[in-house]
Amino acid sequence: MIQRFAAVAAAILLCASPVFAQEGKPLRTGVDGTFPPHAFPKPGGGIQGFNVDVFTEVAKRMKRPITIDAVSFSTLIPGMSSGRYDFIAAPTTVTKERAENMLFTAGYLWTYFQFGIKKGSKPLTGWADLKGKAVAVNKGTPYETISKAEGTKNGFEVQAYDSQADAVQAVLSGRAYATFVGNTSVQYIAKQTPNFVADLALKGEKLHWAAPVPKDNPKLRAELQDALDCMKKDGTMVKLYEKWIGPSEPDGLERTITPGYGVPGMPGYDATPHELHCG
Image (tube, rainbow, N blue to C red; front, side):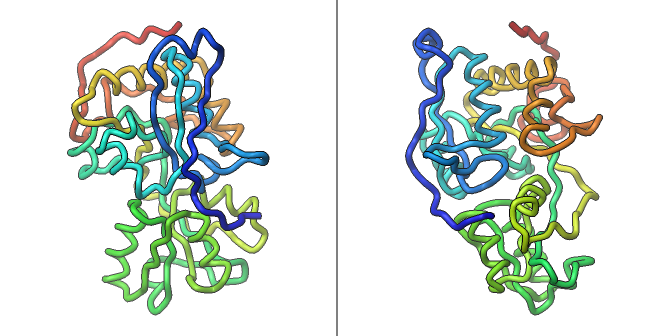
């Protein structure tokens, strides 16, 4: 059952061994700690999830310890811009606007948009069905941007919350008719929450989830992507995907290595060929 909880600001230090911890300066990053299955509280304290496991392994392969803050998603990009974070470990949708201001690794997951509704509600067939209703979203995300644009065209309210858990609670309590978020989150929450169901999926356009770094740090972008690509090559990404999300598709980005650094077709993409060296 999904429960309401505030995002926690405590950082956790993850390291594989004393030798590993001494190898280099800790990587500082953050996740939305209320966004299962990517990052969410675990019993006894701390956070768990797909992205926590992925970037703990990335840091291990880079021979650096890592600190992961669990915060509101809306604080992550400003936090990186201010120098608090070296990169963002939360799943971050690659858009042209964002890619003009940050460097992205290659995508490590496909994402598409999906609605979640309260069990017993009439399923949606499109945005127009929401006229006169309300949609709950996570503040500071593309889900908020897209929903507001559609709300203006189709006459519905958009409620922005500090966490996806709060957005789901708005649906369950009747304050909102639906939540609009990524497919992995909707499907995971539906499995955990009897009164919540995954509804209309907008599969027409798959988007990349990737890790952003500051625009002036291509070296870190390359190091992160090399580790992610090696994890794709040896099957680690698929194992983590199937642990937290479900069966991996043959064309899944968790198993597909794309050329160059970054997302092809997006600002900041570097198509220069490079050889992958995996330890």
